Length: 399
Ligand code: ADP
Image (cartoon, rainbow, N blue to C red):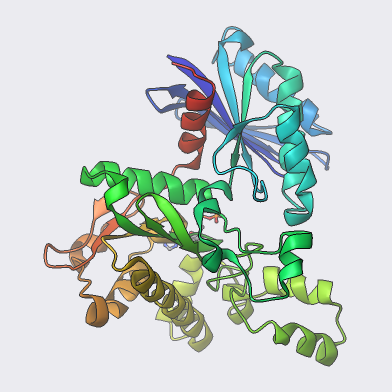
């Protein structure tokens, strides 16, 4: 039995989960939020109870100390020696790593060197890595990248038709995100179906606040919907997804805004919230839709259409599809979205779901397609922390 910590360090937060491996059981989880701001807050869920308290975490190093002390105080561990490995969610590794890696000095430098590709996340992720390395110097630290799983894409999928030197000079290309989630649910799908992943053509739909699809042929991503940044692809909670890039200059001129300001609007004020300013929460939009709100209904239809557009193109590109997988907040808990997408796939692709079963599935595994369906449709809850812990076990050679 080993104890592995999965960490997700943001600019002012540190989320963590301690797992018992290989049993894959969560021992304790929580987060410290508002690090370096007023009243940082430690939230812990342990043995069925949730506790919160204000802590003095003025930086990530202090937050890590507070967290590790809490593990001792709560008697989760008797000593920190019991922690066998730490896995860090890291946004971007550029084109460097197709797999997770041990975060030695070289890997830290690589992540640092591609910070321009993930300016909000990479520096924050590295702060977490450095803080844990300092607190637990003898423990293996692994970086698990959101982009790694997608690096198998062929050039014709990842290149943009812009001047080629933009790629050579600045590595401008499609990277894709949510890789840890797409990888986890694809592996889980193969395991549940009892088939080698090498024999499957899978389309994974990670539909959360951020949302992306991936086409996975024989266990390798061949295309995905997000791009150089997570702005591309589907309309999302607050992001526009794919638009004509000429919109940016047009709106800059009309509204007298800078490119930067328009970019912020496309990331934070578009998608659901651009059409329904009261909320970016899918539940609220479904409620508004049911009450006859035209714009809420429209953006939900636009998103469903776009999901189906991608599925159609991935189907053609892979030469078919065995399984369509829904995951993340909306994918796992919105029977309406699953039904809408699947009904749009019925005529062309022979997708058929058991609507009664679908309407009862919230956040748990299920095969919602009927035996007649030409593509199997699964709901597979994602678990990025578990994927991180598995990678730490594998790369750290921990039993
Ligand atoms: P993130 O991308 O922030 O990790 P999640 O994967 O947790 O997000 O998904 C968040 C989304 O899931 C939100 O838009 C939320 O409205 C949606 N969601 C959660 N529960 C439900 C539900 N019961 N029905 C519809 N949508 C839901």
